[in-house]
Image (cartoon, rainbow, N blue to C red; front, side, top):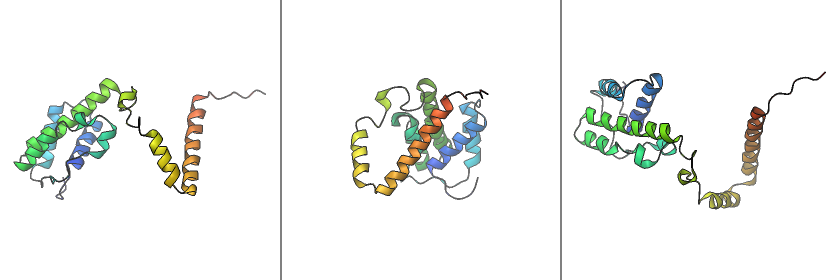
Length: 159
């Protein structure tokens, strides 16, 4: 591992990468590997213990489950504790996705745009420059056309 100081999010991303490379790896083995990789490295800063991209994958109470362990590990200069917290958060996030699907895909209760969609559209309509709105609308139209084309079976040549 490089000697530059990693953030908690960097270490979490590394844990995710290892899991992607070997999805069947037990969490226990993942912990051992990460501890070996980070042993002797500078501990992450405590001012930023968040993992921003995880907010879109699972509810905060799942992905943040191990952050108190991470904080304690940093304070006590204990890589095993830091990695235990990282892997707990990863395990919780993966468990949530395995049981319920991606955040917002199964029910409206987890859809974070409910209740703010109208205000967001109003704000975008009011403050976004017209030329930028046109770019977004063209892009959205292209995406919806691609989706429609992907769902329509190809017509065979009739000749």
